[in-house]
Length: 339
Figure (tube, rainbow, N blue to C red):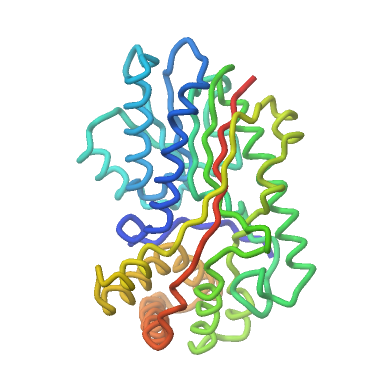
């Protein structure tokens, strides 16, 4: 049943508008994280869940600028960008080459494992990545996302996997941090009413899958390996303490759909809105459908056609119901410090 999580689609860098907005809010906490940093030297800065690099590189530059401003950088640090081996590393390498403001290397490994040597990292950073589970623990059975499926057993399996993954993530990041180092996190979550914000987009994904000529087995397997935690699941001070981490600060933010807001303000056209919202959704979700088709031995030449048909259907529905792309997505931002 369990299958490994894949990386983002190739369009992710240019279409990760929500992720970029979340990263922007997290950048506002960097000043406080740098103030809490208490290390002799910043040798390594690690970015976990870098994807194709556009948002991460901006964050790393900001962290380095803050360190210089606060006189906490005495030599050039090494930045390590981490993501899955299946990530599109070429896109990240290209951006690193174009940017050239710091020395960066990559780590192709799941961040639910230890990725770097013990006591080697001064600052760890991860934005909008921890909702992706290490594996899909069950199938939703009748929907793309476990939140909408009438399947309590599957929901409990996702909840359990999310708890295990979060515990492992904190354990390994704590091990890698030097004493006095900091961990900066932004995590998509549910609000106090259990809302994740993009429900209508996720429901439309399953509707479009039902309209494709998929087999019952393929549709059964089409489940998103994502779990958005509650505030209580994200801010677990007992778990932090068990892993030698101290909570410095946490804050919650709610991010409105940037594209929907731009369209309503007439900053972009309706065509631009529907096309960009489709590309945004494609960026974070296409790999799930592609993996499902590959798992069930679809002919290689058929997969691009089915994916194109899928996104045509998605955009057609969005044009009829543009409010589907209107959302308010909750995030929680954390600063943790290694004791």
